[in-house]
Amino acid sequence: MARVELVMPKMGESIMEATILKWRKNPGDRIELDEPVLDIATDKVDSEVPSPVAGTLVEILFAENEVVAINKTIAIIETAASDAPPAASPALATTTAPATITNVPYVPASSSAPISSTEGRFYSPLVRTIAKEEGITQSELDNIAGSGQEGRVTKKDVLTYLANRGTSPAANQPVVQAPTAPSTPAVPVAPAVSISGNVEIMEMDRMRKLISDHMVMSKHVSPHVTSFVEVDVTNIVNWRNRIKDDFKKKHGENITFTPIFIQAVARAIRELPMINVSVDGTRIIVKKDINIGMAAALPSGNLIVPVIKNADYLNLMGLTKAVNDLANRARKNQLKPDEVQGGTFTLTNVGTFGNVMGTPIINQPQVAIMATGAIKKKPAVLETEHGDVIAIRQMMFLSMSYDHRVVDGMLGGTFIRKVADFLEAFDVNTVV
Image (cartoon, rainbow, N blue to C red; front, top):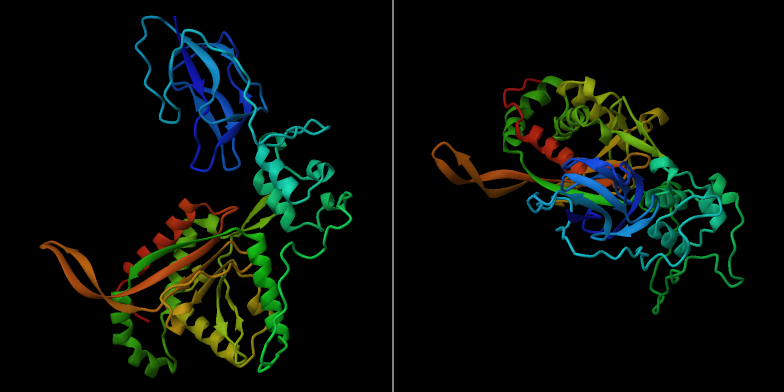
């Protein structure tokens, strides 16, 4: 008989340990190649661990709810002596077959505190570390609702609790602090001073205060990630240059690039609706309406975000009318309260200021915001039937910041790329 070690797989670059959620097999059970043996959880994902060989499970080295380091042996599988040496499963480290195996339970170095509460709940070392650093008491931790398997508290749950601390039921639990614990941030901001006295002090107006509070809150609540793509918008620029004068004469107003961008965003949301969501604690609220907000400048210099409701139901002409109407009334301070509410996704144009790209802050409670940069002529490589050529093209950067609690890199990157694809495929025969 050959004895093969089943090891804890590495689930990502930053993942160094995982929790065993459930053993699917018991000692003595027959296991087929690639058959799931157990379920594990990290702070990013829950996953199954398949067997790298066919054989019999003879020994389990760690119990359910234990935290185990990656590449640590967690079970022993016995195979027939005539079996060829197994190839390592892509998700697992290389297996070995030692003559003797010492079954020493592994205790992670980061787990100096017990990983279970008096109520029997289990917490990963990472959750324990965050709780310790943020001053979360055991009673608070025990009252945090867990979104993991079987109600397990994850890193995301703790961060969500911290973002809403003071409003959740768990926050009502007593918090033990040292008598000298400051009520202000650990690193206080020094007051602005002037050596020469040659300054002017201005009080923020009401809207600037609201914007300031909203931006700080957004960065506190949402872990921001930003993705970028470069888009060839030559067809769009040439089309607009060709029809803009006739459009002005016919309709008495200008046609801008914004309606085209909004149309592409709305189409992409229809195909990837999980970008059109908000977060309520541990719940994801999927919005069925596609309401696109567009950042517009006010006479005071502040920004406001009027919303085009059900943008996916409007054609390019309808979007152009809506964009121009909202932008004009924003400049005149004539927007109605309902017209700046209910947005599910926001578009902002940093190219207006000559910027090629930006990293916008999410407009809460949305989970994504896209910025369009300045359109610049650049040399670009084009693939033709006669080979690659270099041509002068109209290029623009798209950037999108998204809430990494619910929008992973794959969804965020796929979404912004899809918007770019729609823009590059713009029909130059479009009639408005």
